[in-house]
Length: 205
Image (cartoon, rainbow, N blue to C red; front, side, top):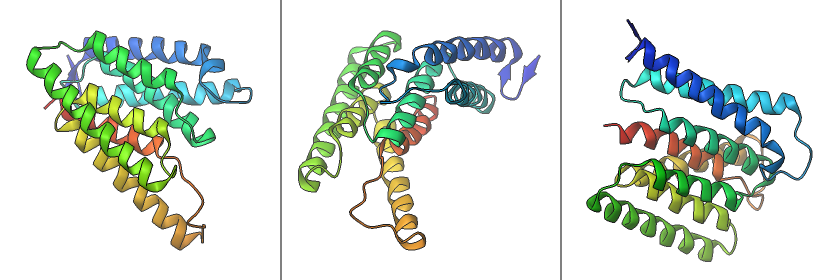
């Protein structure tokens, strides 16, 4: 029996893993990196986003792997924290890297390719950080490199392009439609996460 592009038993497995990981992320909410107390309403909202994303991706793409659900959980928290505080905590960048190293079926060729992608993106974002004089946060620099490491070529580049383009469109809308000042910063993390989601689907093909 199939559901969408996935066998039903795989959908059920994916759902249970997503629920379990989302529950863990809700429990560790005090360590997300936010300054204030996190309500259970907010936690349940993030849980719902993680589960819906995981099931939607599995239904959309028959090659979806359960290990990608862990990225969905980590990156959903990154997007929320950066949106609220405009900071990407090192713990979640490290979690991305560690899970990538542990869960990816590495080959020598893949290690070299992904490491080169990570280094290239790190140098690119570091250059933007230097030129913008802090307009781009160091958290964005490190997270961009982490995406390059776990996604590799060309998905890591695709994630950055999508993230930067959508952030630019969002900033333009704020500037033109809402008269927002150019000096007001916006959080890049949620847009890099969006690119990361697209990159995960790209890895499967």
